[in-house]
Length: 260
Length: 333
Image (cartoon, rainbow over the protein chains, first blue to last red):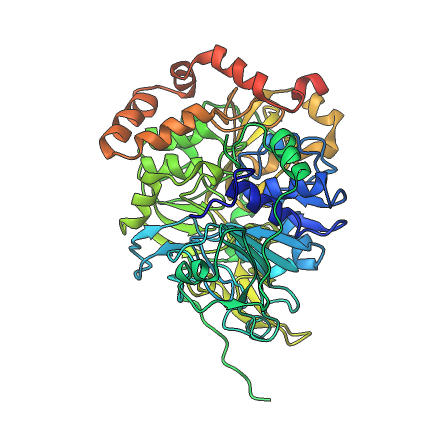
């Protein structure tokens, strides 16, 4: 894996890129790990009025530390609302939630995700994974779904072993045809190699910028489906000193996400 | 317009959404405000039977009833159905005991940021467990339908995916708008357990913080065991009735279990014991080390207090109380 520069590592780059995708004054249901680091960084930089919600029930907390669970005490600190999972999920279904951040063992060109199993036999899978959790609901209901994931051929596949969570399913119009609420869907994918969005016409994943030091060929070599690229293809904006300082000193001082 | 055939699912429905059978059951359930205090061992003996469909409250590693989960394993309960609604450490314990053989899965096997339980994974990969897929919202809404006493609720997720295909949900058409909807069947567990901050002897219970799916779950369950950090007087409950989450008529057993969510987090009380959970995950890599581990902590202990003592007792619990970021409940009241 190409190391972009000595000034920051790939995890820091991904968190900074992810944080910039979140517009101020919006709502987001966020999971633990890198997505929450991105949301906390956004709140401390470009999106101070971003409302963070957790699917277990807490909403608009003042986060002091990265939680281990989306239900643990660190999601509850100085919150506006302690509610329930149905309250949060119903808010999403009602159209009140703008963003969600997901990950997965596999992702395809339409942004569909697999977190259920690897293998071909559902009854006796080669690898059993946790299942949907809230991912299927959040990707169905939230207006914009973002994914943060390492970029390799094992993850970026032509065909998922199991379609747990909907992206654009089989392409334009497929979500609506399946009965999912119109207007939502995959928005951005932030990986170790690039920032991707979705082509508005084909709903296929398209590289919007390459991380510093990464080539188009690197992306092609690490993707199991035919990736699209914008032309001309810019380089991802590097983290600023200010972003890095806040990330290291305030968001993740213990280096749980970004490393020590 | 050509009517399209609705998509069909092939997942097994482990629990029928029979609302009239549920009404008949609830018609016979005692409304008496009687003293329901008992030990965890008595509660599990009396209310958890081999083959029952079981629901666990909380969120996997937060406000779970570890004492009841251990006791199910200790009493060698088998053939349970499990509602895998964000079942993390709870699923891990019951998988170690091979206690369940069917599972409605929204989230199991994983422990969020901590990683995947090697043994729970093995157990589900072995073919020993019949599985059906759901999502956190839809499995929670299955409790809500049951709590409402209706056979199903419509929802707008899960459609169009393999999660739908391996669920027991159905696709329906909205009679008002003509839209495609997901019909999710009511889930009435035979028995469930919720761990709370305070309860009186009759089962009137209050929790602090988020409630996850426990409001609907405690109403959906035919039998309900409440374990509580503190036993309080009914007067204490009546001072704050808007905080009462579970009224006595839902409850069959009340067990006072201090540190009852350990090694999980109990918001406002104590933080999770990450070292102990990491040890669980480590020993699970090998079947024999796991066996020795659960022999030591579950089968060779008489009750949950002996387990706590093995884990460092009051000194360890005090450390976890110090790690808790929220002001302790009894100080705030």
